[in-house]
Amino acid sequence: MSSLIDNVTLLQRNNISCDNSLERKNVDSLDEEEKFNWYENPLLQPNDASEKIATNNSSLCASLYNGLLMIVILPVILILFILFLLLWILPGFGLLYERYAEARDRKKYYPPIEEMQPWGCNNTLVHVVHLRATESKLPPIVYISGLGTSMYVVKSLLIKFVEYMREPVEILSFDSPGYGASEPPTDWNTHNAETELALLRQVIEKSALRKPFILFGASAGASLAQLYRLTYPDDVAGTILFDPTPSNIFEPDSPMVTDFNRAFSLYSKMACLASWGVMRPLGPFIRYFV
Image 1 (cartoon, rainbow, N blue to C red):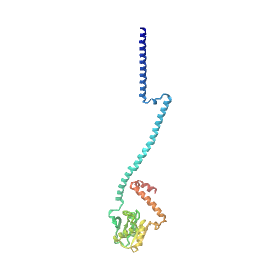
Image 2 (image 1 turned 90 degrees about the horizontal axis):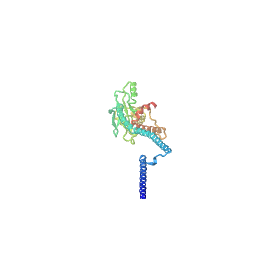
Image 3 (image 1 turned 45 degrees about the vertical axis):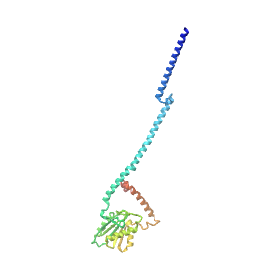
Image 4 (image 1 turned 30 degrees about the vertical axis):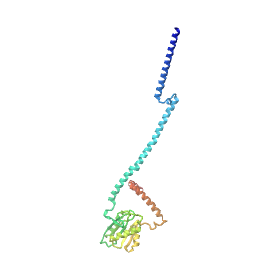
């Protein structure tokens, strides 16, 4: 009987110890589960002070890296934005402003439409001004303009000349195609000194100008005046050459050929910039420094 009681007591003790071990295992597993859920990765949990310092240093380095990255990126974004303004918005505004200013200047500075008549085989609009003076006894004056020097550039000079003579003078002003206020030729490859001479001769004949007359050539127009005098000497009473183009300009070894080519290359670039409205704002500075 006593042995039976001892066996029962032993079984109870074993059951209690098993229950305690199971509870202890459940508690340990819960702690590990809470620990895993809290850190999501046990390897990232600092176990000592050195690991905490390393974690703080890595966070500081990451913050410095992000700060330096923003310092570099922000100026780049700003530069790209400025380039966008310069390359798209400002040129578009300059183009519109140039079209408006060009139309305004045409009304203000360009000759009236009745002075622009079609001449030549291509019916190019040529600027011709004929101031008649039938009662004048003086020979007429034929003014031939140069690059950009239409009659309106020397108008004050001609008026002073007439006032000095104290007698009316008949004046015919001619702007070759591409000069002064005249339209450029339709084909520059076929346009030469002979075509300009033929056009000038046609204008003089249709204007019924009295002969002989005085040729007044300015700049490049002086070359055309000399060519006309050599071709039709009976029509010319005399020539006035105002800042004439040198006769050796087209010689192969002439230094003026290089200078003219450099100048015209610069003018072509300036014309391209002017079409986008860049030259008008720079005009006051160019006049001041040049």
